[in-house]
Image 1 (cartoon, rainbow, N blue to C red):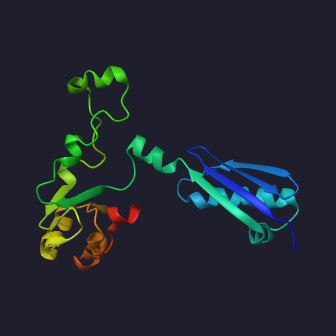
Image 2 (image 1 turned 45 degrees about the vertical axis):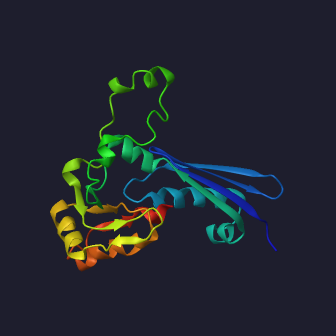
Image 3 (image 1 turned 180 degrees about the vertical axis):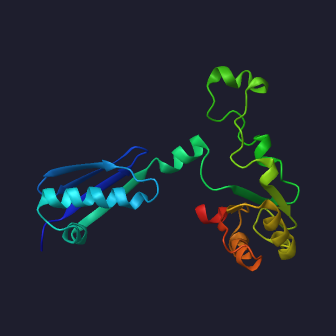
Length: 200
């Protein structure tokens, strides 16, 4: 059996950094420009550098990798800079203003001085503006039981109205899993979608 490697990769906004360590404690470092149009290109560049330093091919390096850890600030950068896909939000009827109001966990993460002046704290701009938020008829109770079934025609209407290129379906129960499939059936097959439940 050949050497075993542990590899770590971090994709930053400007550079992609990588490190490889073998079982003897030998360490190799790599750095390459990040490639926003295809982030994997920067990663491959770093892997090639690591493999060359270790005296093996990229295939051998990965074949004998015990663990490959990956991190990136790309998502955070996109959120902070507010760039990326035009994203819409579809939520249960009656909850359209919920995220804009930002009342959940009041004060969480704020410095003490701001907590004492909460009414004067400037709220950040929502990542999804109210103009791209649509409501659909459905209701799920606190146990995840469907009280009012999702009106699929209503969901298709909401998706069409949003005129967006990515979509978040905000429902917290497993019953929501099928909701993004409405995108394709709603003649919006080019819209990328995700259900909030998938991240839990």
